[in-house]
Image (cartoon, rainbow, N blue to C red; front, side, top):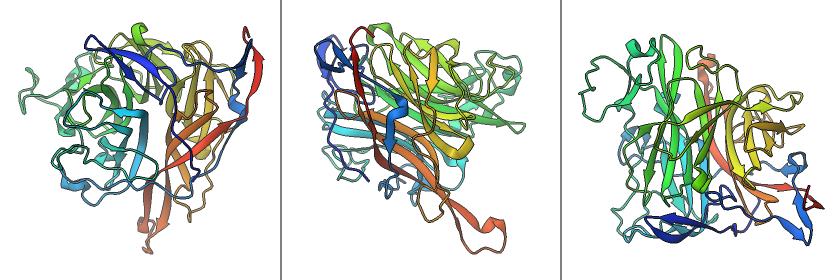
Length: 421
C-alpha cells in the first residue's frame, strides 16, 4: 500500500445561519466553491484521465465486525461498496459529545449473502489507525451499526404495476402502512455514498432493493446526521426503477447533482444498460428530478457496462468519474467538462483484476476517491475487491467469496496549458 499525506483543500459552507469552515475532500469542490489548479501566471494544470497510474493495495484495511445492533454482523469482517470522506480539520465541529474525526467510511458488510447488506459507518483520524465505531467522548457513544432497519422498507406490488411515485415508502409505524396492507420487505440496502452537504451535515444516499417475481427493483434513499451517531428519518429521493450506485456532488447554492448507473427496467422510463443517469435537487432529502442519461463521447475497447461509480469535482463543471465495469471487473476513469452531461472514458482501465486467487483483490469492485492535494493530481482510492477460495468441498458449493476493502493512491501525469483553454 502506498502512503500519502492529508488533503489540503478548504472551502466555506454555511450552516444554521453561521459561517463555518467545512472541508470535503471527496470533492475539491465543496458546495459550489471551486478549488484552484494553477501552475503559474497564465497557466493551469491540464488533466488527462489517460495519464493515471495506480498499484493494487498490498493488503486490505482492517474494518471491525459490528454486532452491536444486529448479531448477524458480529463475526463479519467482509465489506464492500466503500465510500469515503476525508476532512483534515475533522467533523463534526459543533457536537460537544462527539469529537471531530478526520476520515469517515461507509461500507456494506457481506455477512453471508447479498441480502445481508446494510450500510455501516466507521471513523478514524489517520491511515495508521484502525477504523472504529466508538466515536464519542464516552465509550457508550457509538455508531450503532447497521444504520438502518431494512425490514421496514416496504414495496407494494399493486402500486408497482401502476408505476406510482408512491410505490415505495418507509414504514415508520411498525405495521401501519398508511392504508397499504400488503407489501414486499426489502432485499438489501447497498451502494452507500457519503458527502458533506451545504448544511454542514454528513449525508448518505443508498440503494434499497427488492426482489419481486425474480426481478430486482430499486429506489434511492437519503438520510443525514449532525454527528455521525444520530441519523435522520430516511427519505426516498427517486421513483422506483433500476438505479444503482448513487454518487452526489454538492454545488452549494446551485443545489446538488447525483449520478447513478442504470439498468433497463421498462418501468421508470430509463433505457440503457450500464449507462450514467443524472438527477438534480435543491436539497438531498427531496424527490430528485431525473435529467436523463449522460452521453458517452467514446466507447473504449473492453469498457462494456458500468456497474458502479463515484464522482469527484475538480471545478464547477469539471468532473471525474471512477467507474467499475462488469467486463474484466476493472476500474476506469471518466471525464466531463459540462457537469456530467457528456463523458469521455479513458482509453484503458487504470486498475484491472488479476484473477490471482492468492490475492485479496483478485477481482475488483466498487471504488471511491478523494483528492490528496490542491493541484488535484493525486487521489486517494478506497476500493473493494474479492477472491474466490476453495474450502475443499466436493462440489462447486465448496467455494466461498471473501470481500475486503483496500486503500491505494492514484497519480496523474499532468502538463501545463494556457489558462483560457
